[in-house]
Image: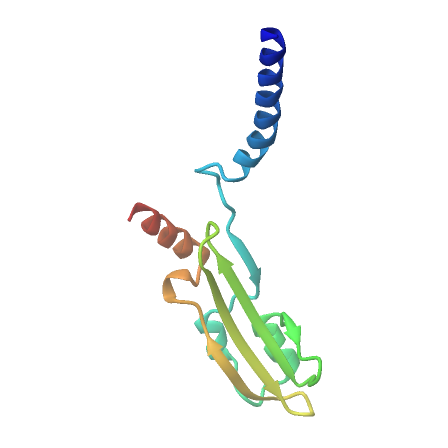
Length: 134
């Protein structure tokens, strides 16, 4: 009888341990989280070189290929960049170019650039280290 109780207790303990150990690995403190960067980062100096009247090819030469082109209006191109440091807040940069029907730049819309401390990756890493210290 006592041996059956001991066997039952050990089996229960084994099942509980087998279920909780994998779950504990998912939320283990101190796990390294990757920095996630996506899209085209645009610096002020590059954006300053782009002016209305430039051809689409000239804009692509300065800024690179856009991340997306509007499905319903091929005259709109979006340069989007997102940066997430160590699983924290996601920072978004968005610049939109509007072209005329003959592929010349008409206007630059949505000049939402990253904060100065995040515009280059080295500065972004320094900002992350400062945030981790505080």
